[in-house]
Length: 272
Image 1 (cartoon, helix red, strand yellow):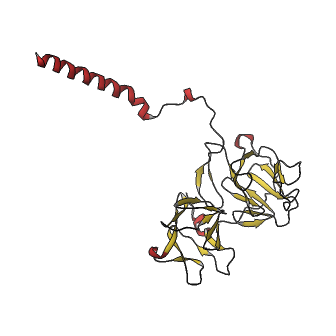
Image 2: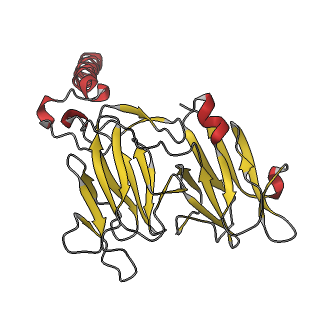
Image 3: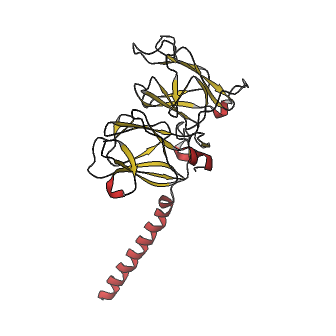
């Protein structure tokens, strides 16, 4: 759910245009193109190329039928997409960044993370899309061969950042990058990451902090409470309760057989 603080903080920032941030309150916001070609919030839905819906589930982007050229994090969106804080939206050459609360500072406490609540770093863009890395121990991101999460690109720093498990989440520490990292769209050197936070290295390698299954967590950036689906459930399939429709099937089958038997008897004796 979106708490009051998260709702007040949601806004769209123009990355390549001199334009004030656009605040996003709960409700539907129409996104259109003005005469100068800039993407702006418009009042009439008929003029919109897309609309943003902010509710307790999060932020949803819905693209108008027939509109082309709208991308989220470099990927085209034809109909609908759920956005997370830190996502980059491209409309008609204009880049918008969805922002929330400022990233949390690194806590003074050095308490290590709880192994029962270990976090996972999952790639959502770039070379590591779809891959997951457990953060039960410190991980170094960089180009060097000794890095745990290696991004082998010439312009990438040999040691870009270090991720450390902490009792309150995951601590991100800069390890020698030129421009730092983006956390939920905000440039940082060091920050405390919580489940749901998006971190971007070198403007294109996107990752999301996720928690084990069953822990409904609140993203600090957006206030959205969502269960994290990262860690797969490895329980034996035979121990899981069957879905309700499956449990009803034997009774339905038995009833059908009884009805068929009754009809057969009626036809048999009725014919005589």
